[in-house]
Image (tube, rainbow, N blue to C red; front, side, top):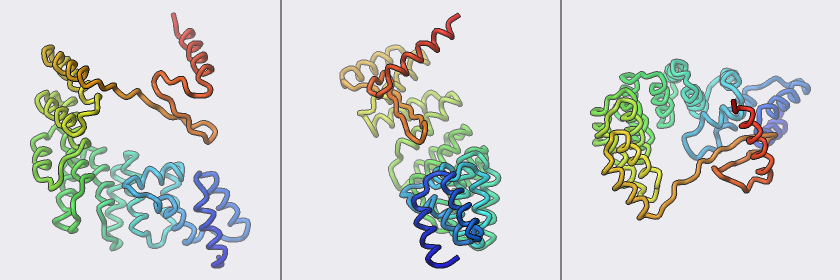
Length: 295
């Protein structure tokens, strides 16, 4: 493939946002007598990740390539995958519950001499969380500084706490929090709360919700959580105190929100929303469906 064609392909890749477009480009190259070269494959994977400013490598890769099969195929064409490509594949597999495959890709990565970074371990920890591999996940977590010299970030602490809380190992999770060099955020205490709900730890759940309220006192949802927690355990006096606090604060709970994509257009809806241009038609159809469901 000539240098000029390479530049044109890269420009087209930057304009593609959907799998059919990518396949059309691939078919176009084939008609010109060019196979999917190493250059094309690398840019295809890199295109799916190069504009990310956060740790959501896997989500963008999956959304643009359409499936894990497509992502795996493109990844497999790379002769020497870059760190970005390795991380994309590990996080992609971890996000969609293929934990063993994600760990296997990490092992292949190390065997080929690529050194992991902080993004690699976000994927590994998520993989262990989905599979319930608590001890293995904590081994990866502890190896970050000890073996690889990688500074732990809030994302890694959040993954470790979530991993431990899901398993009901709250004492260890609290030990992780105490060792943190940064202040725990809402994700940390949210993980505690979710784990406590599953394992029935009321006192720690109460402590976690109060921490969430301290972090964001304007979030009425946290107050509602606390009131519901007290209500579930029959603590009606505390329920009254929380409701009074919410009333005096004058806040309102944010309405529920959802999105749906139809014909390449994203439609956004809020609870009780009447601003959508087809709101009347949608509500009418919902009433018809509700009528059909009546006995």
